[in-house]
Length: 117
Length: 113
Image 1 (cartoon, chains in turn orange, brown):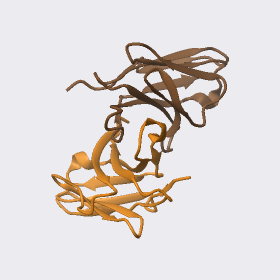
Image 2 (cartoon, chains in turn blue, yellow):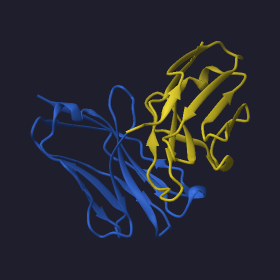
Image 3 (cartoon, one colour):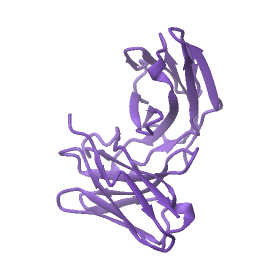
């Protein structure tokens, strides 16, 4: 079974600064995908970024980037130039690659990020 | 771009009543997932469908059932509702050709009184 762990229940950052959210996972699978989802107060689940396990290059989406360390099973999210709208719960999630039979997402416990003006 | 549609957005039911939640996936997405998120918790996988067949099952109570129809929309039927069923229910969809990135609907907030 796969597990995802987010060890930081809450984080805070000043506007325009950089913050890093941590995530570790455990799996015996070799092919998988990792995601960060954002859940603002509206409770909508919004995809922030995704990483294919077979790619060594870290994914980047504008102000969001990841540090993917496959051997260490670590997948952290860095938010640069934090904005007030980044305030949300952030979930790290894992899915096994290889078809719809394996497609269920396993989520971490979440990290509440608060961006202060 | 079209997104996943869920209806209703909010639902209030009494204990022991039934509820039906509907999900309309993104056009050309053939796979649907249902998740339940309790207050302060992470989403938990309930059930998934691919091409109208159940593809995987998680911690879904026997009181719940679901199906996917020919137009790929899905319905989650919940009977004998309990207070503990109060939660946010998400539907997510994906394209089986990629089958890696799930896009979530806005959720249905179910309150059982």
